[in-house]
Image 1 (tube, rainbow, N blue to C red):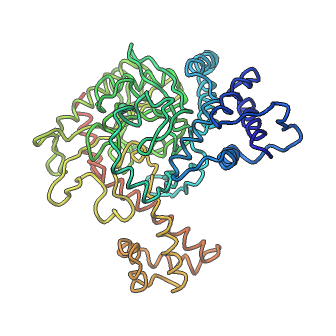
Image 2: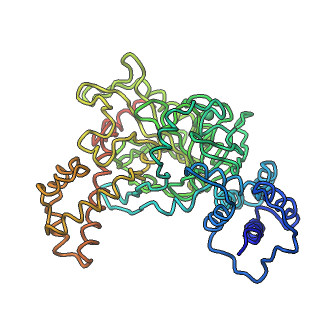
Image 3: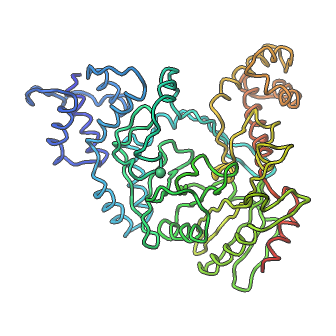
Length: 504
Ligand SMILES: [Zn+2]
């Protein structure tokens, strides 16, 4: 198939996926030909009796191969791909118009439209997302969701070096700025020519809805402020979360905490994360529960982090309760539990998450504290060193809700562990310690050694599968311990209840 016919197929893809219509074809064709420096007679372009080649990523790869362009680095190819897809894209105004048109009949239709567009445009990298390893593990807190994140591209060492020396980008100021839509990208900034945003009005302030290019769960969305300003939890945060679930009641939405150690990876741009997904925390049982005079119910969840669940159908009443708890928490001290609200600086904050249950609003407030001490210089309520072999990064919003996002290195390490265990017919610490990448796992491996031997003996699976299944289960259980480290009250549910009751 010639390059010309592949371009015709690309446009058919655009029409079929409703990114453009037949009317757009002449313009799009001219744009793409110009981009690729192509000239021909249209009569020479034949496509009708040939089969649509593979999927969109394969088609883009073939066009890139045929284009004669040289790509030394992955990022150059990514820019090329995003540029090509951008010719098929509707204008941002058109996306907004359609979104709100669908919204009139059904909010779900509007997000269906926008999510599909974001996937079909290759802005959401489904080719990468599908590489993530996902599983579930039953724990004391119910079923947790586990992910090993393989969706971030592997970088060439030369590219990493170039990135180090590249000037920090002044425009767009960060990865979450609205100015990314349509941006061409470079060595230190991903291309976003095929990226579009839906504008939301929160009390006269412009915010935008977009999807995450590397979704960790269904319809993983990001809601960002038009202004590039730091994350800050205030009364307005709770109000905005409520406005969002009013607009899109089938989505949950949450904010990372606004302090280092307990916050997410980007504290410099005010944003939230949302999605169409039931997080494990939303299924947690309650340990205590009481109802206030205004009808709002407060529950303490059986969860590794300390989470209060606030439920009510009266939005104003619910937001008032949220503010009271938030303010109460900002000055709450409990020396026995090492919770100090202030030293030289503020340490207490919350990770709030809101969702709808039928006609009710549900707000989860995970109580957080980011203090450090000599024993735990990285954070008292942060994954402790004995768990760092699995996870040492901050416990952000997504993990608070029970969805683990674990580092890619684990895949090779699990492979090496299970190969050794199979060969030795059990955990042989001396042998395992010869592999540098496994040294950090040795204590844990001796702890779970009996379980692994038992799995090897009794499992209905093939030996390799039996070992790996057991290792994955042990990692899931370990993740629940990691989350416990981030819990401020730990198992002192009565103290959490006393804190909440004292406020009303
Ligand atoms: Zn920004």
